Image (cartoon, rainbow, N blue to C red; front, top):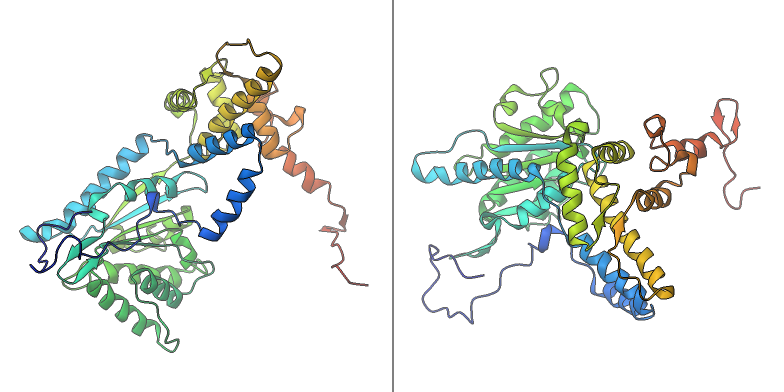
Length: 395
């Protein structure tokens, strides 16, 4: 990355003497793998036959690919507003709406969407200034359960200031955090799984956290802009009963709703895109009726649907490889069918044939949790409680 031409880099520094930016912005904001881990799995990989190695390469490439949708345009539009607002301080002042809440159920795709967004924003990249490299954007995920004091400590670590003094009070930690946000040049902060900060759902607890967020959004002379993502519990910060009207008025909100029948056309187009990338063709699964079936099987979870499409494509590819071993002259295109989705669903849910949503005509009457519910129902019970097995070594 080239230094920012607007920064005051001393004239004695040459391009070879300028230090490299900190390694804090890996692709899609993922945690790099430990070299020791990679060395071990490399050994495992070398023991696999060629066809298995090909599967591994396809799997890695598939997991790396991000599938975009209309949701990404909305997130990008609001992120533009946050970045524009920060820069508007140069021309008079920025407005108070400095937070973005991104809310969605588990596996709705919110974290992956934000990772892709963040990794492609030039505004968020490290900058070389007269003080050295600074990171205008920081990210962290609070661990569960997390106290308010723990939130401040985790945020300080993300800013590059690990806290060793355990005697600091909450107020002292947050004062220190505000100082370090300014000292480290942090303009934007993303807190993922923000609902972990709530140990309870009391009005007092919610308002205490709301006050903390507001205080970070209005640091005198250094207003922070924040992205706060999590499950629907996070909406408690904004609802009229328990939430904070001031925080609502200072925030944008994106709700990543569950996929429904009304989104069927969009999902069919995404399925076409995924199959094209996988070099396979669509068969009977390219219909609105099938997409309704897929939506039902995934509880409308966008992330689950995308993964299931990719796995069905891989299932069809593997089937063709096995057929080619016995019929080398078969040159017909690889086609994804209902059978491939059924096979993937069986592996992921342990569904029997009568429980498999992709194998039954009356699929809408089948719960996606049917197989798991059967397993739970099979647990022997004592009275109204499940029978507890003895711990290992107990007499």
